[in-house]
Image (tube, rainbow, N blue to C red; front, top):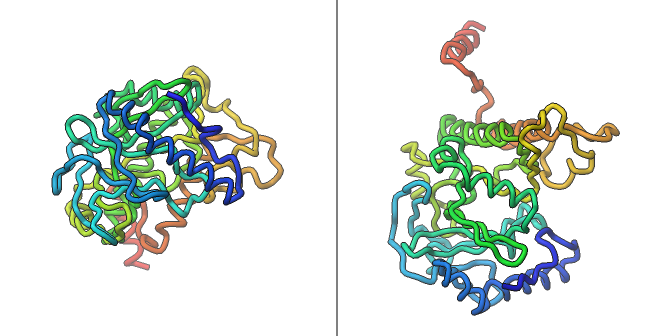
Length: 326
């Protein structure tokens, strides 16, 4: 299969040129030869909702609603504008040029289960991270809140990485309790910790890079079903998106890992100031942790202003006693 991508990362900040590149990518995904190639390997790609759209819809029948069965997410028929249940999009306006357009499409497998397919370049760090994740048992990845890899299809210098389709917009609908927020915080900590244990720095830690095991219409912002699942504590979260990740050799001491300072500016917009005072290099693992802290403060400080993150109930009790006495 011929891949018509000059680069999997944005090659320009010129809107017209970028739109032209996106058009070439849509043509690739929508071509009969591409659809046939995936069909021969057991996957039926979603159909484009309308020409030049960045939304797609399932091409095959699907259940009206379905409970999550790990590694596959549950889904419901909550919809936004138009009659397009389970509509999918790879666009996120918050990330503009660094998002996924043209690199991801969705499909159904032979059992009609919904999957996401991402193209990655061979011999890249992203490829090596996905290869590592594919080698891990699903239950290990589940317990460490990372998206599992179901399959990797080679194609002329690239691989198509098949993952279960999960839902985005993990902060929607709005959280009702501090416990719901802490479920997400804990998942982010677990995912990042597991990656770091295996000498993988994520380098793009943000809420947009978390998924949840429920999806419906990606353009719906109400998520009525998801709200009920969250209230019942039935949602699970997973970290994903390794475009900017770097996988250091497993035998290398993490304390010795350094990157040039400019690398700190490539991805996350919400980040610490470790490279803002003229430093020549930085510790990418510490930077990941600092970025996570910035993200959590930026996102949740107004919601959990008086709730300490404590490791033991005794500390929490001490905190409230101290506040009551003072």
